Length: 299
Image (cartoon, rainbow, N blue to C red):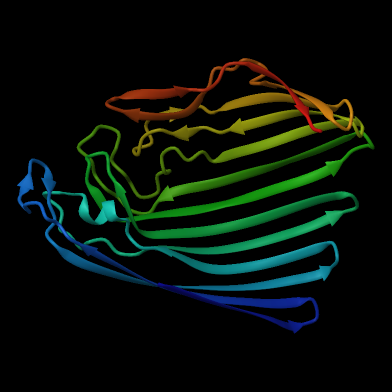
């Protein structure tokens, strides 16, 4: 059961206050018809009922000093009750009912605006996540995980000439642990202050768009993924990668259009995902250079 209420108040010229409150109640009625004995490393949980409540407020202030600019400050809390697997898929050293409601407290400061034909958006944020449940490298469900997320996000669109424009976004963020959790597996012990594994600090996407006339458009895209650690102890890392993609679209007539794309233009070796498992680095290879050509026809 969930209820939500929101109010908007224009308390001064160009100023607006937004307040919201959400309440949620979740009940799990777990019925186990199997024996409740421990089997190997795993615990079969007996019948039980678990109830969780969450109250999540939101408060925001919006200032619009002109038609082309908006600035805002948001304070908010998010919440998520435990998942069924977190509650009832346990090992013998764990006790049912340890999990609580995961919360995310955030502060965001943003500015959206336009300068002539160009537009931009900037947002700074700080988030603290608490009571996170996750499966550790040792196979245990950790019930009191805490992380911090701080960063900046920027997006922009800039027309250069009648034919050329550039657009893109960039984010820099630190995702760090706020707790320590030792592990029997090498390289998987969590220490407060270390980066969350598989979380790059830098990400960006930039596009140069050429539109010589209404029927033809071509785009060169640059996709960057920064370095990130692949294990919890921050001793192994993936160096990141840069990919370039080329796309074109030509409207031959009102009924027919052609499109073509070259993905991974420079045929770069990269990993869609990298991690450290079973004592070794693992890489899930990305796509080699690929060319596609298509035709769209309409009646």
